[in-house]
Amino acid sequence: MTEQYSFFHDRVREAVGTMVSPDQARNHHLVFGRLALQHMDATAEPTDAQVRTLTMPRVGSRGAFS
Amino acid sequence: MWAREVPSPDLTSTPEQVFKVAGHYRICHTLVDDAVERHRVAATMLVAAQRALRTTLYRESCEFAEIGIALVGGAEACWEWKCDNRPANSPTGPDLVLDLTRLLCQAYYLNGQNDKANEYGLLIAVLVTVYVFASP
Image (tube, rainbow over all chains, first blue to last red; front, side):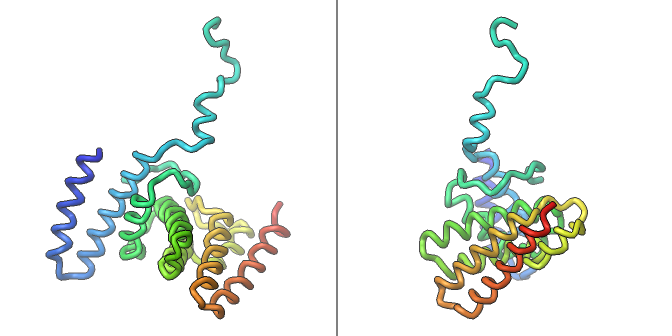
């Protein structure tokens, strides 16, 4: 994911550098922003609440004795 | 293309990632159509504005918060939502709008724009009143 993101980062940056139309540049920023947002979601560390959910035993489960 | 689930604004992402997303969407935020994406970007803008404020980048903080408020339809939309007129498929609640407006007021004050800070301070007072007294 990171390699793919870096690849697109370089390609889009090159493309934006050669753009002349503001609309085209804006569209590329939209694509690039969505990629960055996706990348941020994929690499974010879990929050405290999520960790607590993962480590809490499930209701109704009996662990090793079930 | 983006994550369909809508997480709350969290501080677990690195500042570089947050500012990268905010930097792109500050140019193209008018092109975003989907309500879920608008909410997600507005939440990211809130985090970016908080971090900009902490690092004394007050003007950037104002800009990020303004874009966040514009993405969720304006601070006055809070009143509409409390009257159950929230736009369809919109996950944004009044909490995010209140946080963005409060942060924008603080950023304007710290940036020396007292007129705008007072304006948004009054708006926060109205929003909080609506939020408290119109809650079911």
